Length: 119
Image (spheres, rainbow, N blue to C red):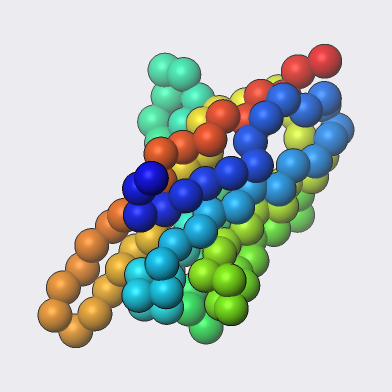
């Protein structure tokens, strides 16, 4: 397993919901802004949402209102709740930990989890 362990992807019908999870070690999680990106075939990897260590969230415009990012600091896990899914949401979803300390900066990526929206 890598430093970030993702789960929760799968196949869902249009209009359905999924929740993605990404677990990290405490040493990473406590010092990182966590986020989700996604990449569909033939496209770039694009931002979905981020959440800082203090809980401040940021969303891509077309996800706001449908997706919710949250973090459980006791479980060192970040979640992405996705509602009202449509075919355009089909992609590989990647978790990222943007680890920052006064001495260094490092971005850590998960292995990706496939989300397919299809009837």
